[in-house]
Each structure stands twice: as structure tokens, then as C-alpha cells.
Length: 144
Image 1: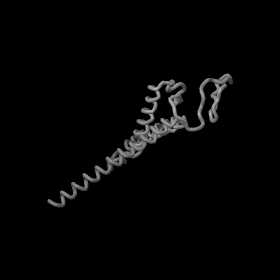
Image 2: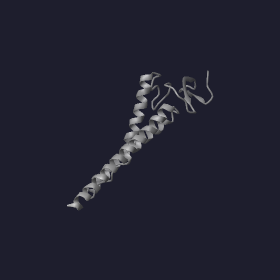
Image 3: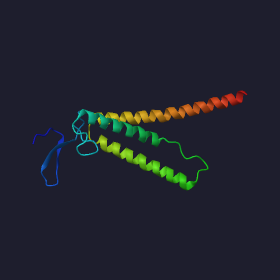
Image 4: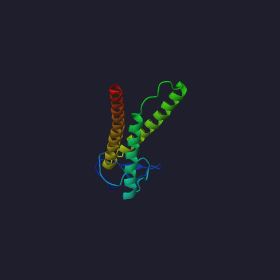
């Protein structure tokens, strides 16, 4: 079996080796295994889809991570349940992203980092916009 340095063959149930290789160092290319065996199927289209899935998972995970807290006066059970459900989704997305990055594919890694960065930018932009609007509203109220 032809193996590159840093590749570990994945064995099947019977102990024989499959043709799939698991990289143990960063590499670039469409021949990756991302989250599921056989996906993205060695095609450029599926590889781009895998990159987009990881990117959007990272954006969503970051937006959920920076979600504002529950409003005062909310029923504690409803508020706790809502926070718990957001936590389940956030942790699930973060673990999926981590597993995808563990494919050691540079495209997937860059998509995860870019997604987290865009998600962080979106949440901070939204928070600063709200703060600026509140400041302008209070300045306008003081002038009257």
C-alpha cells in the first residue's frame, strides 16, 4: 500500500486496510474526509459544499455564542429552557466544527476560522449599532 509520510491507513472491521487515508498533518486538496465517511466524495463540488457547511456552522455557532442574555422578567423555566436549547445547538455546532477541522484539510480549517471571524464581526457590529442608537436617542432626549 502506497502511503505518504503522516498518513495513517484506516482499517475496516476485518483488519484489512481500506483505500482511505487519514492525514495527520495539514494538507490542501479536495480528497478529504469531512464529518462523514465518503464525504465529500472526491469531487470539487462536494468539497466546496463541505467548506460552505463548515463556514456557516462556524458563523451560526459564533452568533449563538454571543446572543444577548434573557430579558428581565422572563419566566425562569422558559428562560432556562431557552438558554439550554441554545447551549445544545452551540455545543453541537462547535463539536461538529472541531471534528471537521480534525480532517487536517487547510480549506476546511480556513472556512472554520473565517466563519468564526464573520460571526464575531456580525455580533459585535450589531451590539455596537444598538449601543450607538441608544446613545443617539439619549442625546436627542437630553437636547429636548
